[in-house]
Length: 487
Image (cartoon, rainbow, N blue to C red; front, side, top):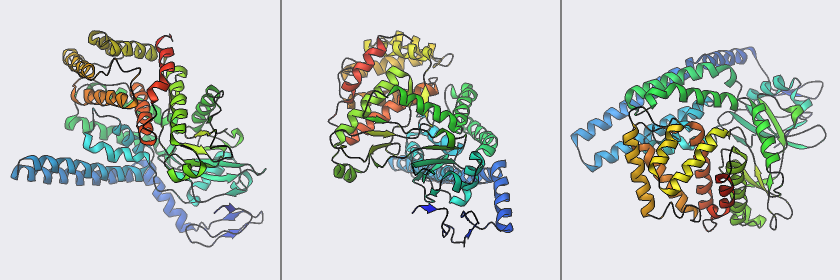
């Protein structure tokens, strides 16, 4: 349902509405409701509410661990190990629900933790990874002020039609359909109201929570380098909360891919975009997970996988700036005439993007050469250049890398890297994950981990949509160009 702001509208919270002389619909804002929202906002932005809820969740988790440990001592054996794994999953699910309800930095921390197999037990990663999916949206009454304060004009002037039901809601924002005064359909991304104000308190709480987790049992260089990695996380989050950064990344990626007619990046409406509001042109589209919808449109999944493989190979190997969140909620097929013959893929949500430095790209290039040649010494040198090995841990890391390269060689992995199927690349990903989990003193820089995760998500998505498409074969020309280049 689209809200026409010159008509009366029954509010989402079932309160009566009133219409101003200009025709704008206003939800009531009685003094008690305002006072209650003000108190809740202070509790949230000061960190009091999150702290209370985190302590409660931590106590519940500790009780479950104690109970599981007690049962294991009374009944040792394989069943106790299964109980422990199940308890970790339940605890991770509890934390995922809490972090999702707190949104913002807390969801991002959960997502970040899910990408760190060297920090989080494998049984706990799946519930945290689910934080990439939707979170409950806020009603229009709670985000309206954000739009009006950022744009400096009433909502009905900027968007004569505005759908109060969001298309989706995620960690830091939700997205609504709307219409410009000239009738152009757009999508409006609106940041949750408290995130900017609560950022300092949220990061302080998360830093304290991280230190406690380290004290309880983190391994390797996490103890030594926690502050550096947390600073990278905080800087990345601050960038994501600034939608002007997202707009610039979207515009640059759109320019880089402009010569590929199968790729569409929505144009940003600059006059109606600010730090906390991002407006872009709307395209009718179908999600990649909507197989019946794609079938009705006449689009084959294999066509989409080929387009995605080409686009991402170009971004990560050639351009160095890439859309770093390739999951079905951010990738769509445009619903238009001619889609059956020439489908176009729509990329949205560039909040998570990365630009790799020339230094990192050069070290990656040398590391890939070492991997292909199964040269452990050279691979270790590249790891040291990227500050991936803690002091005193080089011998253990060298042994673990040598064992990994021997396993890859026995399976034909390194020789077949450039002509093997996507499943082989996923196998290399599993080896890298195992290396991180089992090797004390080894740690990937965040940018490199996000780069690897993006490729991993892409291969996994391709395997799910059209396993018959060889993504690696499509990527080889871009990989060869990368290996032969210099930054």
